[in-house]
Amino acid sequence: MTRRLLILTLLFLVPSCTKVYNDDFNSHRGDGSNGDGSGGDGNPTSPTPVPPGGSLSHRVEFRVEGSALSAHISYGSDQFGTSDVSTQLPWTAAFTTSRNVVFVFITASSLDVGSIRVQIFVDGELFREAAGDFTASVSGTAQITSTGVIAITR
Image 1 (spheres, rainbow, N blue to C red):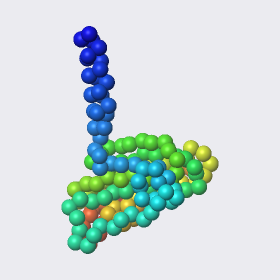
Image 2: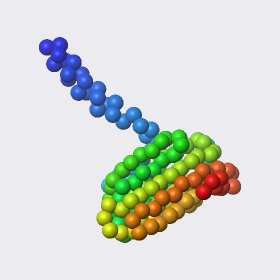
Image 3: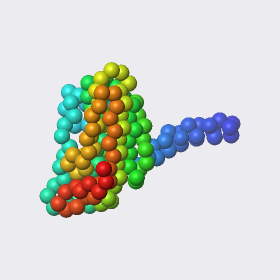
Image 4: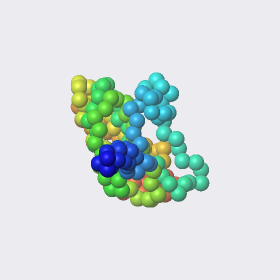
């Protein structure tokens, strides 16, 4: 009886503890099924710019698109580490940070035949972009100021 009670308790506790990662790091397939702002047509929309006067938090958005239907993607930052996903394209992920200096990176490799384009937006501004026939990769350190995003490294 005690063993059954323990097992039932664990079954209820484990699912509630599975989402430990920062809720500000969200990814979406871009097909409209996750409320990603694509309008349900699968085409990503432009990032929302930061309102005039700035913000205490900054939004970093990763995008992958291209003629490839799917890709393996590694992306992240010095603050949140690396995440890996294999998914259909187009794809987006984003996080918010209160830091004014952040290192970000993304690499995507096509899982089928086709081109790949990766982009990183900081506060709605295109920070880095790269494209390739089967793979694309880009990284850099962004310094976020009241006048915009400044690249520290390439």
